[in-house]
Length: 294
Image 1: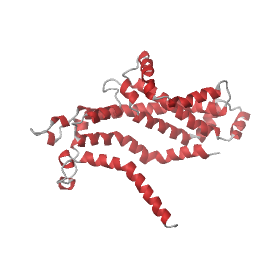
Image 2 (image 1 turned 90 degrees about the vertical axis):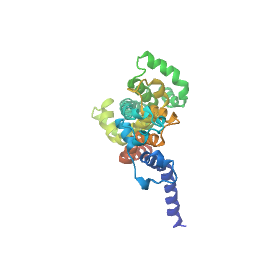
Image 3 (image 1 turned 180 degrees about the vertical axis):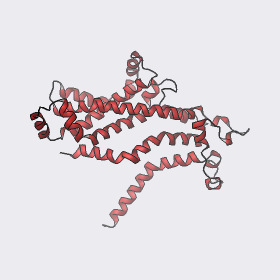
Image 4 (image 1 turned 30 degrees about the vertical axis):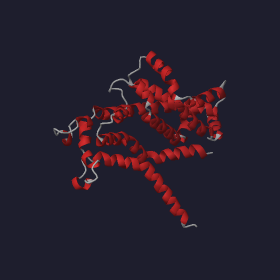
């Protein structure tokens, strides 16, 4: 029985890895294999080797050799794929700005909810936490009208404000749980040294909660990076269009090359892959420390 447990654990882990990592590997494979090979069961990629012609087209605009032939179907090339690099940069700066604003606004707010008593505290906290339960589609019109009144429709700043507001309740909830579990003796000792209010937050709470702050910040980054509905409504031309909107336009073209589509998909998920590989361990540690510390 004891020998069977590691085997079962390995099989479950392998299934999870296959389910989560399989689509990424398929997108990478499809981006390196031309359509004439990908859709031909009689020809293998090992016969001709991988190709980066679709990557070259996305970043330089150079037409793949197979589509330069007179009989090639030119509809398989989509101009939306050429927008992927610029839209990737838009998504990165939007998500990074939303992450920074969530930390700057959400961390002090969470500290206030966790450590202080003020009028209507319970009501305002419940309103903040329950606000994400409102369907996003019901907020499209009022949010659009608000952003339009601010003159920010078609700009990255309008999307940043909306993404920040959408992620802020989760930031406040997660960090307030952690701040509430910090030992009260630390703040009592700080009060004796005339370190109260904002100074105690900066000097005590922030250093002790850096892993959790980083985890919630990255959570806000992921929410912003993958958001589609508000990005579609609030974005204008290619100068402010996030990668989620561009990829949806590329996927809606039923005639587009499968190789080109997979290339765009793989390029779009590279930032999230970097986050998972490099700093996901710190994210998990931060969330767990906020859940069990104290």
